[in-house]
Length: 341
Image (cartoon, rainbow, N blue to C red; front, top):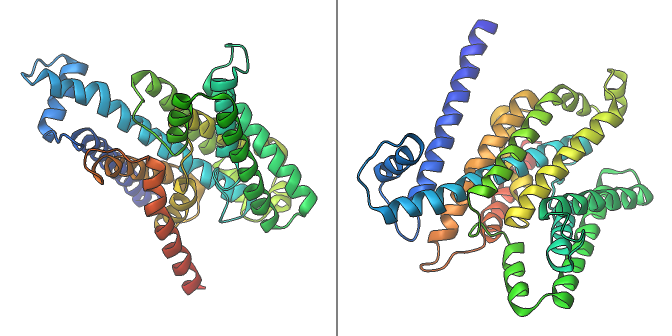
């Protein structure tokens, strides 16, 4: 059985890597100005290996300086949000848990805006750190409210909805009160999810955050499996419940905060992708976590492609695209699950 399972897992990993590579390749080629796939490959080879292929400098600049960095950040964002959704749904044992619903994204947005507009930290705190602080504060506030409301599964979701609305209101208040017209316009567009401004320095932040989050979550995969039976059962199996909670919540807050600070608040990825992935690979987290990371990355890359081509001459906020496709997909998944019960 083991001798058969190992080649299957290796084949699945190679297939996932191939699909992710193809999606990144397509993301660099498709846009307002379509560029042939072979030109994309040559531009990449010229930059990475100094291959010296003769291609148009404008095409090479578009590919390397704009599109490739954009699709890499999109893939990192999709992976991080999907991983966060898997972890939160498993820890809280609630199929509706995700960073957006629980207010973590809203808190991260408030933290980032507080640093950018109000100057919190006196210039010593960057957007990612401000977003991380906001994400943790939001989750703590939602948790305290849920504890007062009750221990039921619905309490955390209701508290998350309330917390999300509160932090969205705080963000809007800060923007309205302290931002000038140009800042307000840019921030409101950014809050809907905006990849237009990302460049290679942002990749240096997004990629390590996504990889670190994946490694941390995979290290706790067996603990997440145990949480499927509840906290008490996990503790009886020798799982250090509080430490696992703290590590995984910190990891999800870190990933969400970094991505929100770079591209804004994006919904439905952390909600839909975990459910879709479970339908494909099952519930064992050793397989579920990496599969969700890859599927989330591919989903976000194609969402970014659609954001550039749905309306000619205009780029849609990527959060609009994920909601347009994520909401019907979630409704379909839920209806199928109900039919199977």
